[in-house]
Image (tube, rainbow over the protein chains, first blue to last red):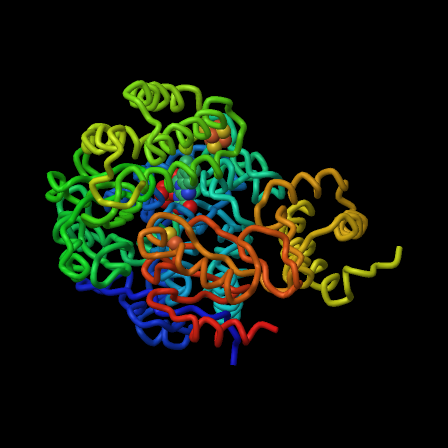
Length: 427
Length: 160
Ligand SMILES: Cc1cc2nc3c(=O)[nH]c(=O)nc-3n(C[C@H](O)[C@H](O)[C@H](O)COP(=O)(O)O)c2cc1C
Ligand code: SF4
Ligand code: FES
C-alpha cells in the first residue's frame, strides 16, 4: 500500500465525462485501471499513426486554448517553440494558486496518468525529451501521487527510453514549489525551476525562444495538457464537443455560497447562471450578489448570462467562480483580494510593490469608515497606473477586481463612505 | 565535513535529486523541502550544511530561503497548521475556525510557537475552496465546514 497524506472529497462532477471521466470519485486511479479503461491508447495511436507535425495540426484545429488563465491558443504556442532548434523542454504548470482555483489538483490526485499521457504526446509533438511538472508546495499528496504514477508509467514503457518500442524517448520530473503565487507566472516558474528566486523575467524573449536553461520551452497548464489525449482520441470529433471555436471540455471550480461547491466539467456553451445551477444553486436559498472570477474580476447579476468561453465577452481565464450572497460585502471581499496581491507581489516593479500596498490601505479606510470620495479617485488612479508600470500578469491584474467593482457596485463604496455597510459585515 | 542535520537518509535523497535533475541548482529547493519536513524551521546551520554538501554558494541558498514562504517563516513547532484566509474561506467562516485553533492550542496565529507543538499560520488559497474553510496540518488537508471544537480536538490529538 502506498501512503498519501489526507485529502478530503473536494467534490467533482461531470455530465460529459471527458476530463473527469475517471475522476469523479475521491481516489487515485492506478495504472492498471487507467490502461484497462482505454488509457495510453492515445499515446500509442500518436506514436504509431501520427507524425509530430500531425499532432500539432490536430491541436491547432482543436481550437484548444490554455486553461492556466491567459487562454492563449495552444497550437500556436507549440508552433513558436517548434520554430526554434532543439533541445526543447515541456513544462506542466501545476502551481495552481489563483484564489478559488482547485481544478488541476482533481486531475493530479485522481487521474494522474491522464496528465502524464498528455505530456508524453505533447513531448512527442514538440520533439522534447524531458518534461517537468512544477507543482505547488502546498500539494504534497499530489507530488507523491505524480512521482509514483510516473514510476509506474516508466515500468510499463509509457515513459523513458524508446517508448512503446519506438524511437521516441521522453521522461518527466516532478519539481515542488514552496509557497509563492508568483511562481505560477511562466517566466517566474522557469526561474524557480532553475533553482532560483521566483522573479518574473522581462519579456520578450518569450519562453518559446528562451525558456528553461535558455532553451525553447513550452509551459502549459495541467488541464490544457490533459486535453491532449482527448484530442488525439477524438480527432475531428473533438469539434463536436461544445460551441464553435471553443471546443473541448472545461473544468470550473466553484466555491462560496452555493449548495454543492466543487469542480464541474462542462462544454463552454454554458453560462454563469447554468454553472451556479449545476452547483446546486444558491446556498440556503440566499440571494445572489456577485461572482469573483478568482482575483481577476467581478460579475454582477446583470452578467449572469455571460458564456463561460474564451470569446471577448466570455468568462475566460481558469473558469474560477467564487459565488457571494447578499450577506457578503464587496468592500470586505476586495480587501481580502487586495491583501493577497500585496502579499504576493514579488517586489521587482515599484508600481506593483508599492501600488498593491497603497490600494490595500485605501480599501481598508472604507471598512474603517474614514474613506472620502477622494479615495475612490485614488483607487482609480492606482488601477490605471499599476498595470502600466508592471512587467507581469500579477501587476497587470492586481486592480482588476477593484476597477470592476467600482463600475458595477459603485454605490457600495459611497454607502461605506457614509458609514453604512449594506451587507452588515463592516463596522 | 561531518553532517549533523543532513542525515544519511536526507543525503541519499539529495543524491537522487542531483542525479536526476540536469542542473545541480535544481536540487536546492527540493532539498530544502526535506529539511523543512524533518526540522520545520530552516536555520543557518541547515543552510551551511546544505551549501557544503551541494557545493552551492551559501548566499544562493539564503536567497532562496528568504524568498519562499514555506522556508522563510520561523515557526518553532513540530506541527504546522495552515488556515486558509482567502476569499472562499473568508466568506465560509475561516475567522471562527482560526479562533478555535487559537483556543485549543493556546497559540496565536502567525506568532512563534510558545510550547513547540503547533504553529498556526494564516495562508492564501490552498486550492481546496470547495471544503472551505479549509486547513492543513503538516501534509494533511481537512474540511473545516461546520467543524466543532470537539472534532477539531480529535484531529489535533493525532499530531503529538
Ligand atoms: C501571477 C500569475 C500566476 C499564474 N499562475 C498560474 C498557475 O498557477 N497555473 C497555471 O497554469 N498558469 C498560471 N499562470 C499563467 C501562466 O503564466 C501561463 O500563462 C500558463 O501556465 C500557460 O499555460 P496554458 O497556455 O496552458 O494556459 C499565472 C500567471 C500569472 C501572471
Ligand atoms: S508586476 Fe509585480 S509580481 Fe510581476 S514582476 Fe513586477 S513586482 Fe513582481
Ligand atoms: S480560498 Fe481557502 S482553499 Fe481556496
